[in-house]
Amino acid sequence: MKKMFTLTLIAATLLANACDKTQPQKTEDNVREDIVLTKAQSDLSSKSNVFTFDFMKTLASKDDKDINIFTSPLSLQMALAMTAEGAIGDTRQEMINALHLNGFSEAEVSGYFETIIPALEKVDKTTVMEIANSFWAKQSITIKNDYAAKLQASYYAECKTLDFDSSAAARAINSWCSDKTHGMINQVVDEIPEDQKVALVNAIYFKGEWTSPFEESANTDDNFSNHDGTKAKVTLMNKDASMRVFVGKEASALSLPYGNGAYMMTIILPEKGVDVNSIVAGLNTETWSDYYLGGDRYQVSISLPKFETEYTASDLCIAALDDMGMKSAFTRAADFTGISDTRLYIDQVIHKAKVKVNEKGTEAAAVSYIGMRTTSMAPPQQHIYFKVDRPFIYAISEISTGAIVFLGVQRKF
Image (cartoon, rainbow, N blue to C red; front, side):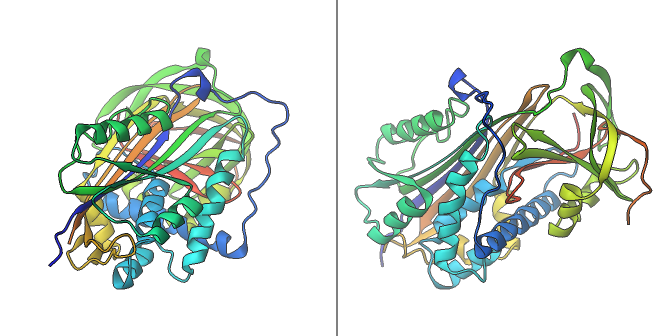
């Protein structure tokens, strides 16, 4: 019987500022142009959002109902898609089903990421968006050439060889993460366990400034009604604008653009007396379409808290993915022989994320670590007061594809 090893997959996703070279570039020639996708890629992008909402709802149902959640389902999906490239049989089918990529060929899935990665980076010259992937293997494990070639061609992954028996391996991976995230995340792994043989790393770096920033002089201090019934003092950023607002029976929503409008933050605010958790539970592509694209134009007075949130989940991620149908990948019956003839299975998933929202724009960071071991509408109003003084949901997405990069629920301060 073959000895089982560990494969570690790290997906690091970041939205941050750090040094000057990360600052959005001011330019006059920055007209927004839609990302052009094929019919299959457009359908796949929609399915990607199905995974986003499915994962968020499942995770939120398992975690403490009063804490803040902030995730990057796109990062997790991309990391799992790279893993699925080496999965075979039932293991692959369960992963594809959980990712809601069933019905698409292997070529369509890899071709989608091959298209979307550079497209998301280039769609706005004034918004920094960088995506990087890497593949790390120990000399003692044989990786199949076809698998490595697929990661290089479709996911633009750098392929590297490391001595995983030394502390230099951890330093090398942490250094790569720090470089690709402009110093936002410097420490991903403390050490590489002896039985870890392969690592995959995905990093997304984003920094966006509001198209129309808030003026700090307009800030006010106010109370925020936490989900647990307590009150917290917050600083509200305030401004007036003419914009589209979706006004529903249970929640209202508006979107604030970054840069040239290619990226935006959508804020979903439940009506007073409506539990934010019920809105999260009702999220799907249909309700998202209303929140994201629906509504009429109003004169709006916006009050949005400045906030920072950090979130970590580990076992809950595995439990959520298991509930979503990804079962055999976490057992010794898993088949990842598309990666190596060495038997592998996933035994650890860690997701960490943080976000900062202020007058200028948004900064955030997320890390996903996957370890594998061997074997009806309300009536229109003339003026709307959109005061975010109670739990709310927020998402950062690219407008032409609808790709959601980050999704969070703020329940308390």
